[in-house]
Length: 248
Image 1 (tube, rainbow, N blue to C red):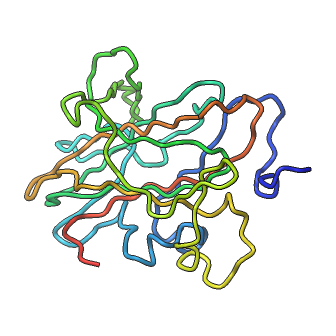
Image 2 (image 1 turned 135 degrees about the vertical axis):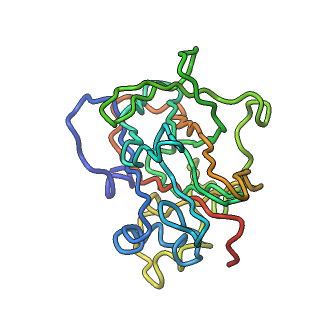
């Protein structure tokens, strides 16, 4: 019997080992093009990559942020083409930066074709390579290189604590339950169960700075959970940030 997930998986060149993940962050794009992730927007949760409120501002970027020069790495440089299903996990760096934000929450929403597991770590930036660090080359023409490793001084190097808002287990899969379905799809019911997004958010606020510029680097660890190298399903992953000063 054909796997239920085949209804939503695009085909790629046979034998390719990379498992792609689409990363989408613009609120308008999500609201218009990806109803599976519209719960964030509907609940005033999707506030990344745009000013939260003046004079406060909160953004998501990829890799290095230079506050003095006012430069940042566009989120489109958050590549997931290094997710190899034959490896235990892959690490990817992004940052949340802004001005006059005392704290914020990070939120994830993702579909479940690949049954990946996601972990979030606070990271530290260095110009010196270290074992296991993520290498990042900036895109301003300078080709400057930075390295990002899990910051052992934050949470003892453990993942950032968070909570799933609508996850459940069924038939050996981790799936979204029905509690957020109406917010994303309304009365429409013909949705493949792997296309229902799971929503996750940090339990406690992550510190920013109440008056000045700040940047917090993160490593997003994508754990492949033993998938084989010929799997070709794709998933959508949304990363958002929400200021703790916003009242829903």
